[in-house]
Length: 217
Image (tube, rainbow, N blue to C red; front, side):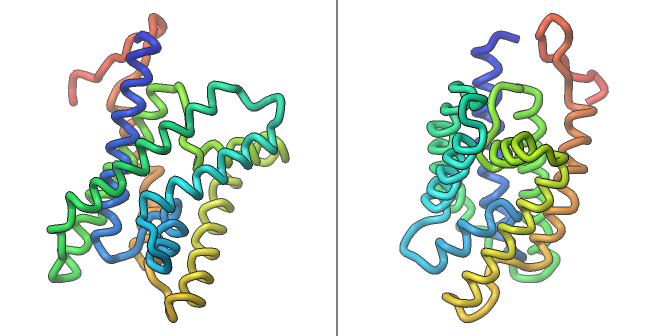
């Protein structure tokens, strides 16, 4: 697979992930942990979810640079335009999924599970493309590398921290907890498992650099 193809694959994966985030929000059962903070701030401000996603992700890019310094690969600055695309498509899909207004708990679970699956698919394909990380993953990698802490532990700590900060902001400015419900927990628990499923069964990059899809799918 050429580097150009890898980047195209990565961008497609980012767009798919953005669609999943918007669909999870439309379930009204809470947002994914990584989106909880920008979502709550968007509710408490005139800014959209996409705009707040971009702003917070830029802080994460800055955090990566400050932590890694000379070890920060300049190619990772491409996270900035990629995040711009990611954020724009979040708002695009928020408008596209405007018709999704669940009328029962069962129909809330449907967009939640569909959205979480799309997020997991996007994460898996980004792993297959293997060219960049979105800032949410990039800051976890930077903290893990700088402080020599296992990536998984930092990832969990990062997600929990974002949800806690979102809850505090929501409690102060929205007079209650908004955007954090059982859907947030469900998304946190199953996204990784679904992503691993896609990574194991969707395809792989062989030694020649060619993406090979498994025929039984």
